[in-house]
Structure formats: structure tokens, C-alpha cells
Length: 590
Image (cartoon, rainbow, N blue to C red; front, side):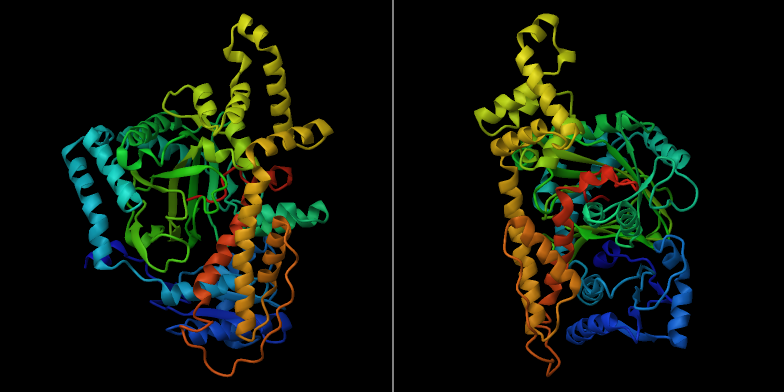
């Protein structure tokens, strides 16, 4: 009963049939690309512990019926145009989610099949372990006042215990109710009516993943690049719309929200069980307001900082949904550690004035389940300054985007992020804001201020545009080791992709184009030779067992999704150059 309470799912609906657990796959029977993808789908379906896919050739009456039920989302993902089935493979998931181009990326379908067949709810022992931490917090809430009950030393210690032992925590009635109401009103008043297109509307943008960043970096003319970016932003992997509350556009109540969550994080920094993990976590990004607009909008399983490249250490999410019921969906599902995990530990309902906290690392894979009504939230990430120095983009965000938390001295905390004297000297130069210096101090620091201005100018231009900017980048790269760190990340991803390529060969299957393309991208970024062609060993002679090569595909498919995100994470901010603006956001968001 306890497990059922934690893992309540919304009614699954596929083609009007509640409880349906089969993915309907409609494919063009005359397409060679579809036939190639079908080989992988059939092999994987045969190896799973239960059947997950109904294969429906097109044209046929059954195919026409299925496509008619999802005409609206297909049009939306096709940028308003009628969807043409020629050469296409379309998957309709039990949740109502539609995958429109599986022939081009069959691994997204494989991952959904594996999820359907293999993801399991928490064991009773896991439920009890989580409850041992959350139940005392609920008792403290019942005995205290909304918005202030968590401020006691005992409550903060309980939160630290939960983050240490189960890696996440949930706090109800976190803010005074009037403040939570003000935040919700800001969302309702500013959010445009109707769907938000790829290019955004009224200050709201579509949530993006690293695939959007890949589209931005694509060669070719601007029109084709922008069209690919627009299609990527409309993809069903992530369905939220976003608005940032920053110096340019402040949402009501944001400053008071910052003060409350900052106070909690500053308290956690003093707790022995988690204080060490929060050393140098002295910064935070601007508040990100998000709405999942119903219609099975979701965000697939991911981690916020999987490759340790962007500095995020702790994720906090405040939910703003009144009258939420389990049937509305939209739960935050938190998995056991690592992206390979097939068991989840907790489903968090996005109830009004509820704060969820969890580590932003690979220890806490999570997803937003399909939402069947508007689901609003505001997210703040707490950022480690030292980790932010490891990559170029995180360094740029540290200088230009984040704020120092809890009333701490910005100059001191920026300098403290350095790991050696040379780094600290550079950070001291960058911290010398002339607006905070007296006239005499500015005169004495003239050379440092000139150097600071040159570095900030190079950052503003993404270290491009002139030789001086490029030289500045090389100097900083030598000091902080950006290229060395990213080459290591790309090598790790390339190794995973190579394993997946070999897996297809061992099964007698040609690797899907997307898998080979990802490997080629990662190999090039890591300075490795291009992958050699893997020749299939021959047709499959028998049904593979779950323990055999096909059974091993489950974590491989999950890693495929992770690799696709990590591949573009470090350059995601370059989306600013596109006509369809990639949101100014760390790459993974709830």
C-alpha cells in the first residue's frame, strides 16, 4: 500500500483505452530507413520481459485511425504544417506522448520500450528509508507555522540528513502563503494564452535540450539551422515553457523567494553531513519559472549536471499548483543513483507551496511525468564556484549570470573558488568591480581594472572577433584547464558510444545513423580517430535472451540519451546567435 501511494500514476490513455501499456508504432512500409529501424525495434522487443510495441504498417486502416488521434501534436511538432507519413516512423506512447521521427532516431523509441518493460516502483524497504526522513519533517510542519517552520536548527538538520542519506528532500508549506500566491499570480498574469511556438512569445520560451544546441552549431545556412532548432524545441522529450526572472525581467516575489531558499542553503552549508559537499557553493542562477501546459507535456529522464561541466550542485524547485490530484500527472520522479538505474525511489506530486531539493549530480536521475493540466514551478540552482572554473561556459556564467547568495561578499567568494594562488590572483582581478571602489582604490588598481575590462570584453564576445579575445581565451584555458577537462568528458562519452556501436554489431544489426553520428561527434571533440565501420555478424538466428547482448541494451539506450545531452552541454549558451533563441538556461531543467 505504501508503494502504491508513492508511485501513483495518472491513468494511461492510448487511443482512448485507459490502462493500455503498448506503444503503437506506425511506419511507412515502403521506406528503407523505416525497415532499418524496425530491425532494431523487433530485436529489442523480442528480448524484453514483456511485449511493448504494436507495429502498424502505413498505409492501412489501423494506421489512419492511430494518426487521426494524434494529428494535433504532429502538426504542432511539424511547425503548423500537416504531417506527411512518407518515409516516417511515428510512435504513440501509452501516456499520449508522440515521437514523430523514430526512423531517424530509433534509440528514443528503444528507450521508451525499455522504460515501459523494465522500470520498477520502489521496494517497500526503499519507501520506508525515504519515509524515515520525510515523516519527521511533516511532523515539524504540523507543529509550526507555514513559511517559517523549517527555519529551526532541528528542521535544517533533518533536511541535511535526507540529502545525505536519500539524496533528496521535500518540504511542504515552504513559503508564507501570500508570497507563494504572489509567485503564482506572476505566472498566470504573464503567461501567454495558447501554445508557445518555437520562437517564444511574450517573454516565454520553449525549454531546450542539448539537441537544440547541436542544431545551433550545425553547418549550413541560417534558415535550415533555425528550422532544425525550431523542430528540436518542439520535440516531445521536453514540453515545458520558460521565463527567467532576472535584472531584465523580474517576476513578482522573486527576491523574497531568493531570500528564503538562500537562507535554507546557507543553513545546510553549516551542517556536518552535507557541508563538505556545499563548499564553494556560494552562487545561484536567476529564478526560472516553468509551465508544463498539459497535453502529456513531460521531460524525459535526465540529470542536471551529469558530466560535471556546469557547476550546478543543488537543485531546488518550488511548485505552484493548487488542487493537484494524482490523475493530473506531472509528478517529479526521482530514480536511484546513476542514469542506468531502472528503479525509482520517489514520485513527488507538484503541490502548491511544496519545495523539492536534490543533488544536481548523476546520483539523482529524474524526470517529469506527462502532465495533463498546467503544471507551474520555479527552479533555482545553487552553483559551486570551483567547479564552474573547469569549463569555458560555466566560467562565463560565473562572471556574468549568477549571483552570490546569502549576503556573502561576492569578491571574497569568487576568489575562494580558485584552487591555487595563480587562479586566485586572476579571480581577484576579475572581482575588482570599479563601481565598488573608491577613487583612490581605482587609481591604485588601474592596471588590474584594465585587465579585467579586457577579459570581460572577450567573454562578452565569446572569445571571438579579434586576436586579443582569442589570446585571452588561451591564457584562461591554460590557467583553468578547460580543454583538458572537456576532452576527458568527450572521451568518456565516446567510449560509451563505441560500446553501443559494438553492441549492434554483436546482434547482427546495422547501427542506427544517430548512434554513429553521436560517436563521430564525440570522437572529433575528444581528438580521437573517427570510428571504423562495424560490420554486422549476420542475421539474428534466435530470440535473444534478456541477459544476452540485447538485454544489455537497456543501460546503453539510457546512456545514449545522456550522451546526447552532455555532448552539447558545454556550448549550449551559443544558441544566442540563432533567430530562434535557445533559452539562457543550464541544460537540464525541471
